[in-house]
Image (cartoon, rainbow, N blue to C red; front, side, top):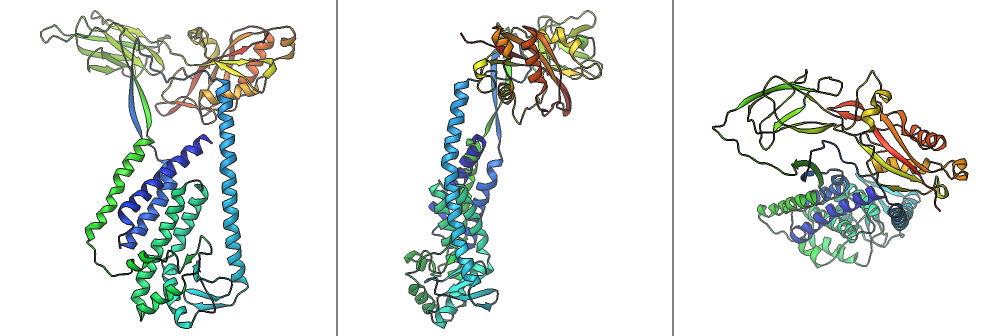
Length: 529
């Protein structure tokens, strides 16, 4: 409901923007064809533009060493999750009945018209089909069918056909269908009903304009309109001959010449576009860091500059390609080549080097000018937090607590035993794996719903925290599930079982290539007193 609710909010915002510009600047203008295009554009924008989102950068600066990692928030409050579920259920309970009622009403109306068509004699009147029936007091067109009451004279019938043929030839029914769909989707939004009326009103202006050009006597045409004044619209998908019959409609029939520059009023929609796009823009967080005690020193032009050379490697001495080497406090830097080698010039003796690479802990080191430096990068880690399991709520309702982070270094010591020898395993990558379309939150919810507190462990009052390591391989499969810290075989087995039974993830990727990513998580089995 959350994603669909956001879609409805954005859709309503787009429609509201178009409606306000039309009401303020365009509704009294006589360029009806342009107005029709504008109104249809508003309908389409409200359907499709919510799928388009932009982002803006947000720089997060903090003290300490940089961790080039995607930040995952661990910990979900059960009370908050329950409240969110209740609100979602409540909103669906309000929204769906409105749709059902509106759709039912629309089906009933259209069924009545279709039933009349089936039981009536049809008079061909290309491209229309004329139906004379006492079922409806007012005249209207429904797709290619024109309904006229038999009490209407032949002269008036010709004027009505002259008007309704414009609706049929210009396919106004397309606009009505789009408006009807939007009314169904946004039945709660008053502006959507107003927008639908504006579309129908503009249709009548268009039909009046063409009909007056084709009639032999404009006075007869207007008199025919007045004779239909007591009628009322039949269905939402129909163009009623007497729709919005008031002084304004007659005034809009006057042939007044307006400046073409008045069409420039359409450009007022551009700032509305900018406002709505920015209002729903998503922040893109970027991390920067400063040292706890930064020493910003200007590089003296007269100070001796030296060259630093060296290799960037992993713990196992494999070279790291593309690692970043930058002089702290400056824009001078380079990257390591396929052999892990780098060469950096214009380095002063009192400067510091910042070495970073996605998935590895950033290093701040002093440069060495005698010989080649050998810099070993240490993997960073990402943990899932702690999933707390209580026997009284096992398999139904659990709570999640934030992990204290006391096993941050566990993957480094355990990795030789738990990773595949024929594939490289990352700890943090540019595009982290996704679980059920989400990330940590979705995974934790799944684990909560599928973990069962062993009955024997409850009887024997066995509780504790099981630390688990797992790998999401390049195919998205959960592999290499291992216990890093055991508490009891019963609890260990249940933790391994539930983690191993997780469905496939969307694999993570590094520089566009699917890779294996290792995680750690904690399943906390707690017995309430």
